[in-house]
Length: 210
Image 1 (tube, helix red, strand yellow):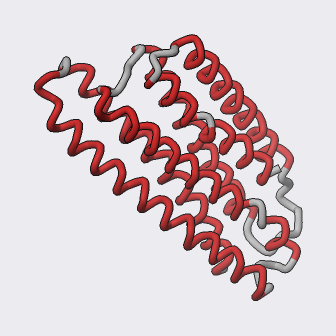
Image 2 (cartoon, one colour):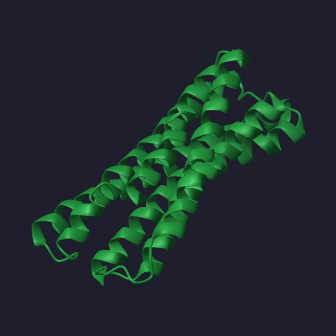
């Protein structure tokens, strides 16, 4: 169920590039449909989160504390929640990036989605890690390699965001101030999806270190 929860959270994140492409094309019918799909994925993740919390018994024998696994689920949930926040902001304000930033915005969304996807790949090894009590050297090494890639992807998304903010700064004087504020917020939220995905990986690494 923990792995299924991350899959649902990632599903929401993977829809962000499609949302940004629809935004760039000024195709609000498609954007609204993507928004609905993200909300649906986030809702399903939320239900799964509650189910995990309810059905992961205190007396279940595990090589790691139950509370640590529940913390992992909470972090994973942030991925879906933030994707939903981004979609809500885009649709709620029918906001678009300036033409000069459209491609960069899509690339940033793709980078964030890739980071989430890599976190999912690592989390999908959780059952194997549990089976070997987090001590199987080969399994642990494989997951550690995945987490190194996850860190690289997150750093790449940060670098993209820095460039986008710098480019947006140069265009500020020609844009409505309120719109500029929300564009910066969207950039930050897209980065947050990648940050949350990396945080899930960090929590998995902590579990392996115990």
